[in-house]
Amino acid sequence: MAVPSADARAATLTPAVQAAGVKVALGGTQILHGVAISCAPGEVVAIMGGNGSGKSTLVRTLVGAIPHSSGDIHIFGETPTRPTMARVGYVPQRTSAASGVSATAREVVMSGLLGGGHLRAPRDARTRAEATLAHMGIGNLAGKDVAQLSGGQQQRVLIARALVRNPDLLILDEPMAGVDVPSQEALAHTLAERKQAGTAIVIVLHELGALAPLIEHAVVLENGCVTHVGEPPHDLGVHALPGHDHLHPHDDPRDGEPGLSWEVTS
Amino acid sequence: MSLLADPLVQRMLLVALLVGLAAPIVGTYLVQRRMALLGDGIGHVALAGVAAGWLAGSLAGFEQRDALAIPGAIVFAILAAAVIERMRSHGTTGADVVMAILFYGGIAVGVLLIGAAGGTNANLLGYLFGSISTVSWTDVWITVGLAIVILAVGIGLRQALFAVTHDQEFAFSIGLPVRVLNMVVAVLAAVTITVAMRVVGVLLVSALMILPVAIAQLLTRSFAHTMWLAMGIGAALCVTGVGITLEHNLQPGALIVVLGVGLFLLVSIVTALVRRRSRRSTAVTAVAS
Image (cartoon, rainbow over all chains, first blue to last red; front, side):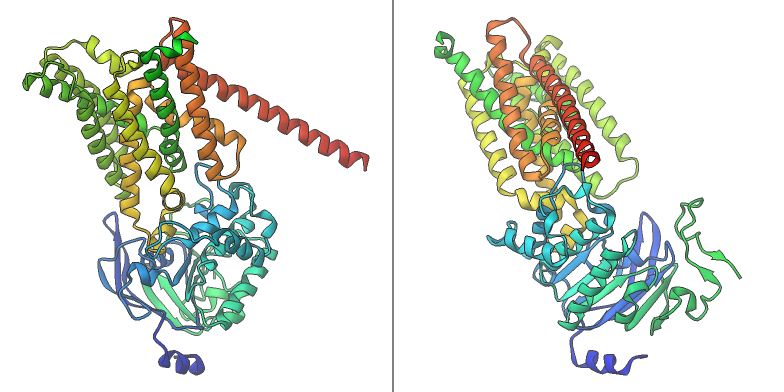
C-alpha cells in the first residue's frame, strides 16, 4: 500500500482488527455493502466520509454493538469474544456522555474497568480512574457531574474511560466533533503517545485536522462502500481524495437527512 | 408507643420500610435509562395477573380466593417487563403503541377476569390503591424475600447495571453481557412493582420508584450517591406516611405519594434559592475584588 514501512511492520504482526465483506442492515435499510478495514498494532487508520456514509455504523459493528449480516470481523486474529474485547477501548460519539441520572466523571471512567467477565470494577479502580483523568488534564473534574462539563471535557472523560482499560486497540468515533482547541491538542498528544506504545488506533474523522501527522492510512466510505484506501489527504481533508475534489461534506443545518448534505460547490 | 406493640402496626411499618428502601433502587436505573413511566405500564399488566391469580385460586377451590393473586401478579409483571425490554432493545417501530395497548389491556383484562372469578371491582381496589392495613405475616415474609433479592441484585450489580444503562454501546464494546443485564433491570422492575403494589397500589407504584430518585437528583452529583440517598428518602417517606395513617384516617398510598411530591417541590425551591444566593455572592465578591 501507500506507506511501505507501515506495511512491512503490519505484515509481521497480527492485525488488531481485520474485517472483510462486512454487510450491515438496520431497520430494513442496507447501510454497509461489504466493507473491509485492517489496522495493525502501532498503526493509526482514519475512517472518513460524508454524513450517512456508514462510518459510525462500521465502528459500532466492529465493537459488537450492531450485528452484521455477513462478512468476517477478527479482533487480534480471533472472532470477537468477551475476553478479546477486554483488549479494546471504544470511544463512542459524545451524545452518550450524559444520561438520566447525574454521574461523576470518576464513575463514568470507572465503568471502563468492567467487562471481559468482570461485573465489578477492581479494588484500585478509583485510583486508576483518577490517574487517567489527570493524565487527560482533567484530574480536577473527577467529582463533577459529566452533564455539567463542556463538550471538550466530556470528550476527554469518554477517552479516559477507554484508556483506563489500557487497550491494545483503540476505536474512536468522531472524537474531534464539537471539541475546543485545548482538548483537541490534548487528544492529539494522547493518541501520539498510544501509537508510540504500539496501540492500534481506528478513528472516525470528518477532517484530519490536528491529527494529520499521526494518520498513515485512510479508509473512505461513501454510501456504505469503500471508495478509497491508502494514504490520507494531508492538507485538505476528504476534499482532496480522488473523485472527491468537487464534494464538500459539510453539515447543512437546513437539511437534517444524513447522506444528502454533500454540496456541489465547483 | 403502645401502638408499636401491635403486631399489625409492626408488620405495616416493616413492609413500608422494605418497600421504601427497595423501590428507588430500580427507580434509579429506570430514570437513568429515561424509562420513568415503565413502572406504570408494568403495574397495569400486574393487575391482570392479580385477577388471573384470583380466578385460578377460585377454580382450584382455595378457601382464600386471593391466595394466588400475588404469584399471578409476579408472573404477569415479569412477562410484561420482558416483552417491553425486548421491544426496547430491538428498537421495534411502534413500540410505544404496543406498550400502550399492553397497559390498557392489562386493566381491562383484570376487570373482566375478576368478574369471571366471581369477585367484584371492589376486590381490585386494594390492589389499585394499596392495602397495607390488611398485611399478614405471609405477606411480610414474601416482601422480605423479594426485597432481599432486589437489594442484593440492584446494589451488588450496581457498577455493571450503571454501565449498561448509562451507555449501552460502550457496554457492548467492553464485552458486558448487555442483554442479560437489561433483562435483569426489567425483571427487577417487575418484582419491585409487585412488592410495592401492597403499599401504594398499582396506580401509584411508579411514584415510589421515581419520586425519591427525582428528589435525590436535586441534591447529589454522583450516581451512587443518588441511589443511596433515594433509598433513604424512599424509606423515610413510606414509614412516615404509614405512621401518620396510624393516627389519622388517611389512605396510606396516596399520603406517601403526596408527601413525596411535597418534598420534591420543597427541595426544588430551596436548592434553586441556595443556587441563586451563591451566584449572587460570587458576583458580589467579584465586584468587590
